[in-house]
Image (cartoon, rainbow, N blue to C red; front, side, top):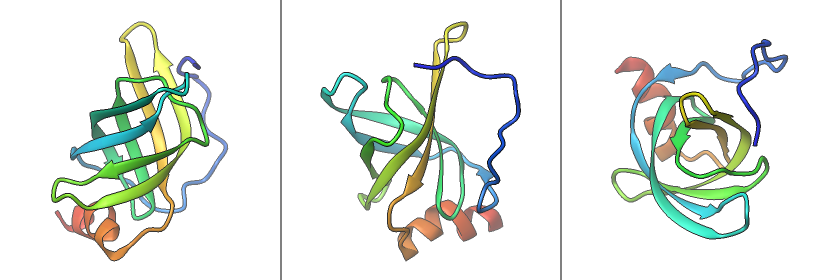
Length: 114
Protein backbone atom coordinates (compact mmCIF):
# COMPACT_ATOMS: atom_id res chain seq x y z
CA UNK A 1 0.00 0.00 0.00
CA UNK A 2 1.54 3.32 -1.14
CA UNK A 3 0.47 6.87 -0.47
CA UNK A 4 0.04 9.34 -3.30
CA UNK A 5 3.39 10.72 -4.34
CA UNK A 6 3.86 14.40 -5.13
CA UNK A 7 6.64 13.88 -7.64
CA UNK A 8 5.93 13.55 -11.35
CA UNK A 9 6.00 10.21 -13.10
CA UNK A 10 9.04 9.36 -15.13
CA UNK A 11 7.19 6.99 -17.48
CA UNK A 12 5.72 8.20 -20.74
CA UNK A 13 2.20 6.99 -21.50
CA UNK A 14 1.89 5.06 -24.75
CA UNK A 15 -1.56 6.44 -25.61
CA UNK A 16 -3.59 9.58 -24.89
CA UNK A 17 -6.01 9.23 -21.98
CA UNK A 18 -9.53 10.57 -22.06
CA UNK A 19 -11.54 11.46 -18.94
CA UNK A 20 -14.47 9.10 -18.99
CA UNK A 21 -16.57 7.47 -16.26
CA UNK A 22 -17.67 3.93 -17.05
CA UNK A 23 -18.76 1.43 -14.42
CA UNK A 24 -17.13 -2.01 -14.67
CA UNK A 25 -17.48 -5.17 -12.64
CA UNK A 26 -14.01 -6.07 -11.36
CA UNK A 27 -12.92 -9.58 -10.29
CA UNK A 28 -9.63 -10.95 -9.05
CA UNK A 29 -7.56 -11.31 -5.89
CA UNK A 30 -6.86 -8.51 -3.43
CA UNK A 31 -3.55 -7.65 -1.76
CA UNK A 32 -4.06 -10.48 0.78
CA UNK A 33 -4.82 -13.08 -1.90
CA UNK A 34 -8.57 -13.26 -1.27
CA UNK A 35 -10.88 -13.53 -4.29
CA UNK A 36 -13.32 -10.65 -4.74
CA UNK A 37 -15.89 -9.22 -7.13
CA UNK A 38 -16.91 -5.59 -6.93
CA UNK A 39 -17.85 -2.61 -9.06
CA UNK A 40 -15.31 0.05 -10.00
CA UNK A 41 -15.57 3.27 -12.02
CA UNK A 42 -13.02 4.60 -14.45
CA UNK A 43 -11.35 7.97 -14.06
CA UNK A 44 -9.84 7.89 -17.53
CA UNK A 45 -9.26 5.45 -20.38
CA UNK A 46 -6.94 4.97 -23.32
CA UNK A 47 -6.68 2.50 -26.17
CA UNK A 48 -4.52 0.23 -23.98
CA UNK A 49 -5.75 0.74 -20.40
CA UNK A 50 -6.91 3.28 -17.86
CA UNK A 51 -7.38 4.28 -14.25
CA UNK A 52 -10.05 2.93 -11.87
CA UNK A 53 -11.36 3.96 -8.45
CA UNK A 54 -11.51 0.72 -6.42
CA UNK A 55 -12.51 -0.35 -2.90
CA UNK A 56 -9.81 -3.01 -2.34
CA UNK A 57 -6.05 -2.80 -1.86
CA UNK A 58 -4.42 -4.47 -4.86
CA UNK A 59 -0.90 -5.50 -5.86
CA UNK A 60 1.05 -4.23 -8.83
CA UNK A 61 1.34 -7.02 -11.41
CA UNK A 62 -1.91 -8.72 -10.33
CA UNK A 63 -4.14 -9.98 -13.14
CA UNK A 64 -7.81 -8.97 -12.92
CA UNK A 65 -10.94 -9.34 -15.04
CA UNK A 66 -13.05 -6.34 -16.04
CA UNK A 67 -16.58 -6.89 -17.25
CA UNK A 68 -17.91 -4.05 -19.39
CA UNK A 69 -21.41 -2.57 -19.32
CA UNK A 70 -22.47 -4.91 -22.13
CA UNK A 71 -20.92 -7.99 -20.49
CA UNK A 72 -17.70 -8.05 -22.50
CA UNK A 73 -14.79 -9.41 -20.43
CA UNK A 74 -11.25 -8.01 -20.52
CA UNK A 75 -8.13 -9.37 -18.80
CA UNK A 76 -6.03 -6.57 -17.32
CA UNK A 77 -2.79 -6.20 -15.38
CA UNK A 78 -2.41 -3.77 -12.48
CA UNK A 79 0.38 -1.37 -13.50
CA UNK A 80 0.26 0.75 -10.32
CA UNK A 81 -1.84 1.16 -7.17
CA UNK A 82 -2.12 4.20 -4.90
CA UNK A 83 -4.00 4.85 -1.65
CA UNK A 84 -4.67 8.27 -0.13
CA UNK A 85 -5.40 8.03 3.62
CA UNK A 86 -6.80 11.54 3.79
CA UNK A 87 -9.63 10.84 1.34
CA UNK A 88 -9.68 7.02 1.68
CA UNK A 89 -9.40 6.88 -2.10
CA UNK A 90 -7.84 3.92 -3.90
CA UNK A 91 -6.75 4.27 -7.53
CA UNK A 92 -5.21 1.73 -9.84
CA UNK A 93 -3.72 2.03 -13.27
CA UNK A 94 -4.29 -0.95 -15.52
CA UNK A 95 -3.27 -2.23 -18.91
CA UNK A 96 -5.44 -4.48 -21.07
CA UNK A 97 -3.50 -7.71 -21.68
CA UNK A 98 -4.78 -8.21 -25.24
CA UNK A 99 -6.61 -5.09 -26.42
CA UNK A 100 -9.44 -6.12 -28.73
CA UNK A 101 -11.58 -4.09 -31.08
CA UNK A 102 -14.23 -3.95 -28.31
CA UNK A 103 -11.73 -2.39 -25.87
CA UNK A 104 -10.61 0.17 -28.43
CA UNK A 105 -14.27 1.22 -28.86
CA UNK A 106 -14.70 1.57 -25.09
CA UNK A 107 -11.28 2.93 -24.17
CA UNK A 108 -9.96 4.75 -27.17
CA UNK A 109 -11.51 6.03 -30.36
CA UNK A 110 -15.15 6.18 -29.25
CA UNK A 111 -14.21 8.04 -26.05
CA UNK A 112 -12.04 10.50 -27.94
CA UNK A 113 -14.88 11.32 -30.33
CA UNK A 114 -17.43 11.34 -27.58
